Image (cartoon, rainbow, N blue to C red; front, side):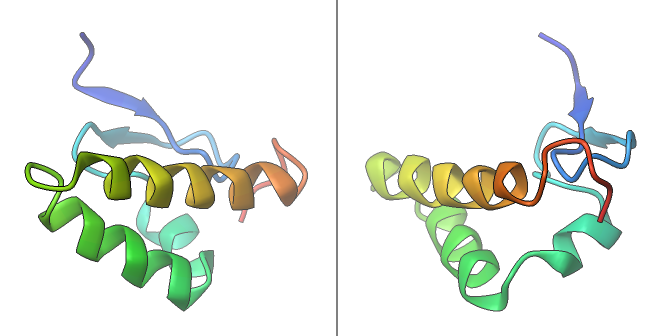
Length: 71
């Protein structure tokens, strides 16, 4: 397993496994999605389904912006 992955914001930046997106693309994510994902990430060990749902919502948002269009 790689220690990095490509930012879903379409900017091409490689980010660490513990991060969803680069700082620039993370700041483009609506605050309600970012907050929900941060809360769910901290509680992922006890509420994994909540974390998966928040992650899916964030990734769907990035994909809905046009896929490869950078933030």
